[in-house]
Length: 459
Image (tube, rainbow, N blue to C red; front, side, top):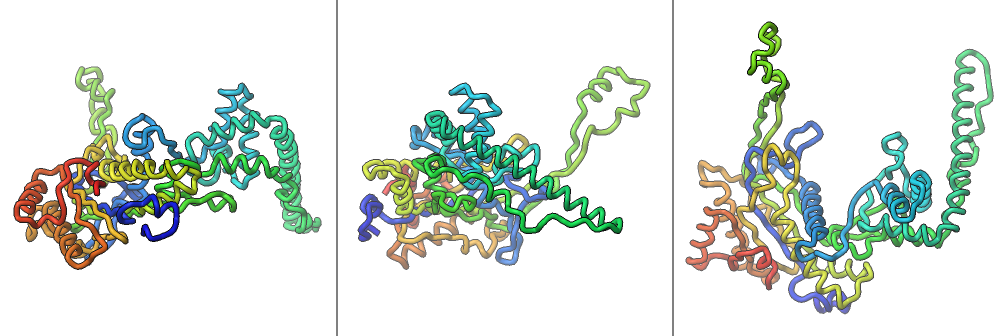
């Protein structure tokens, strides 16, 4: 890779790809569910496997790292981070009102008009009319940056916004009139009376709207651009609604996690108590109508899963540096930012857990059974080694058998390929630690043991 004559290649030392592999065990949890509240699953190796989607994992890792950075923790403390939301008009309006004293209604109308001017559309319902129809991943300070620019150029922004809102109101009125005329024509036809329907070639309302001046458009797009948001450089973004928006092809690839054994689900029956009812019964306050107080306050079922999952993700270290350079970051800053982002990526991969049902399952406290990291000239996904599901009655303790199989796989690949490095291996599990200790003593560990997350990225 370093043979490429590019600034990013000159900044890259070592292999292009950092591959991460992890085993973790959940007990009576539900980290992610489908639209019916059921665990997600697919068939692999002839057996159904419980799945935790890549989307759920990526969001957990991305928000974990953002919160740490914003709290001044971890290697990305002090760096700009992004946020994915539909509320950019609200955030811009709040900045205008709080910082510059704008009337909130005028601020919101202005922000919405400008975002519509660059191509974004808003919801049609009362609850969504101030929200863009799509989520937009942009630097957290984008609303403030837009507000600052609006205030600095208030005269020209206000002039355009006034014309735009008037044209849109007139267009909406014309459209409403057209719809009313069409409805009247349909009603008349139904009653046997012919009324000419409105012309089908009426000008489209959007064509009558004044276009956003180039200067203003460039300022809005610049504020919404990825800029130096590290998590956008890592995870990427795509915004189809704005043709000339700067999109980013992410540097992280994430696979769906799945159980290394056949799926194990349980439909858990629960009964929720009514505190007021139980209080009356406990203190004999309602002895005449005691029969009415029998039974639970509410009952139902929830689906829970248990099992050991295999997870995989890979960081394209070269692509990360390209993204940082493309964001405008100076070459002498890119290397430090890329190394910090890599370390935080490993931290999030190791520690972040999807938040679903966290209060009733405490699943977010789970520690990995095994984390294995290595570099290579290409990504290496070891999901295929679990095509044959692990059976506890045959293979023994599932997590230890899975760890043994994963280590054996890496040892095999190491013997047969030259484009891959030995692994750093980290565990927080007593049984897996015994496995690593025995392999170390026998000289069969395909790499070295790591005692911290930081060591997983050492080379």
